[in-house]
Structures are given as C-alpha cells and as structure tokens.
Length: 384
Image (cartoon, rainbow, N blue to C red; front, side, top):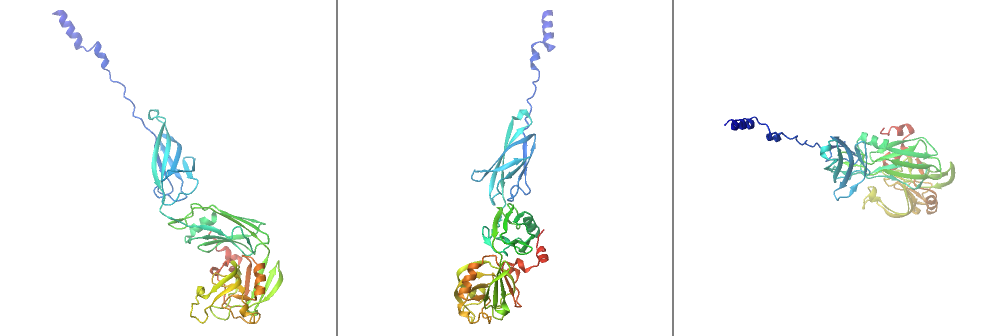
C-alpha cells in the first residue's frame, strides 16, 4: 500500500520521461524581394522614349531581360536600376519584363524572378528626313528637316530644335528657324561660302510631335556646297544676269509672267528646288482647268522649279519673239532652247534666283522661302 502510494505520487508530479514534450522553435517565414516597375508614363502606355525604372524591397536588382510579343529579346542597358532600350519602344506592342532579384532574406533563397507585362502606347509615327542629303547644292540651299506631319505645339518644336546639331566648315554664322510647322531649316546669315561642307545630326528618337505621334529614329545627313552661282531676273526689263563668284558670265533675254493677279512672276529671292531635262506643264495643277482659254498642257525642256506653286525657268521656243521685250507667260521664266540648255547645265538645286521688278511678292511657303526674311526676321522663327 505504502509503495503503491509513492509510485502514484511520482507520476503525478510530471517528472521523468514526460520532459520530451517541450515546444519546438518555429520555422521563419521567408521574405522574398519584391519589385515595382515605373516609367515617365504608365507602363501599359509606354511612349517610345521611356526608360523602365525599378524599385526593389528586401533585395537588390541583379538582372533584367525584356522580350517582345514574339519572344525576341529587346536589347537595352541597365544602370542604377534604370533600364533603357537601345531603340525606342515600338508603338502598339506588348512586352514581357523578367527581373532577377537578389534576396536580402537568406530563408527566401538567393534570388527571386519577377515577371511583369508592359505595353507601349497606341500611337503613330511622324517620319522625319533631311532633304538634299548627300547632294552638291548651291549657295542658297538651307538645311531642311522635313516632317511628315505638322508639329503644332511650340514646346515640342523647341525640344526638337534643341536636339539638332550642325557642323559647318568653314564656320559661318547661321540659325535654326521653323519656316512652317513641318519644316525646320538652318540657313547662314548670308549665302553659303563656296565649297562649304555641312554635316547635320539630330537625336530625335522618342520625341513627341503631337499627342499621338512620335519620332522613332534619329536624323542624319550632309551636303556639299558647290560654286557661288546666282541668277538675277529683271522682270520689268525682260532679262536675266547669270553670275559666278560675283561676276556676270552671261546675260539672257527672257519673258516672264504677263500682268495679272495669278500670272505675274513673283519678285523675291527664290531657290532652285529641282531640275528636269523634260517636264509636262499642265495648268490644271495650278488652278487653270481644261476648257479655260488659258489652259495649257505642254512638254518643255530644261525645266528648273523655283516655287511649289508652278513657277519654273524653262525653254520656251514659242515665245522667243517676246524674249527680251515683253512678258507673255503664265508666270514662268521662258528662254530660248539654247539658253535654257546652257543654264540648265550651269545651275544646281540650291542656286539663288533673285527676282525684281514686279509688285507680286514671293511668300515663304511658296517655295524654299528662308531668304524672304532678313537676318533679324529669320532669327525670330527659332522655337528656342
């Protein structure tokens, strides 16, 4: 009885083998690194020039891989947690970002991979080019950066202009100016020096030109200025002087536009835009339709365009009797075939054509109109 009582007391005190029931240490909950991706615009509406900005919590950014909707890798550079694509984002395109993160918490493993989908904005491209690149041009040819669609916003024009660079050898004073909303030009204060070399570049990739259009490539080009040739036309005297290096090399009798609001040849400094050995002149393209007493459809030789509105210098054998004595054309400058051939072979695109003697003035938007302005007036056309 006594022994049994002692045994029962021992079990009731809870000592002995029952000590194995101690609570184990709990396993820590791992805390993997987390990622946030941002850009200058929402990552589902990326604009072409945007870069991706990464923010990591509980870790660091180790690597970034971007692929397009077809699984092809998009190249770019990663620096200070900012990933910049080598080329602008294509418009209306989906991409996948796979980021490798190094975890601060050792219980989460060494790395974590986070995948996110991003998308570029649904927009359009504004094509831009440098006209007359790689050409030999006359001393009146400005640098012309031509946009396929107008850049209405003044701030956007300023950003574009600031991104442009020009190198002129030998150096000459000049300035950028917007002749209209789709043409940015650089002209020297005076005509180019003969033999000038001009190199132009613009880091335009990703710049907007409207709320829904962007430039998706840089622009680059160059041209060489040839000899100093100038054509002077005296409308009221029916003659033309052709100069080289300041000296008159030939005087040519001409006929210009007959008197009239739409036929008088415009006075002002124009520039040869293009040259065609043979060209069809159709008056319907300048508002004189078939059926009109003034309608014409002619095949002419040695045509050099000086306005977008239909003024040319060309051979006009039918008006030789009037050349040197009367103005009988619809606005063009007519020469004999022999003189027109000589002039055509002598001149190049970009040669200045200085017209005087009429009360109808050449307007800037009617051709390459940068020389319609004096130097002070031209500088006011800068967007910067």
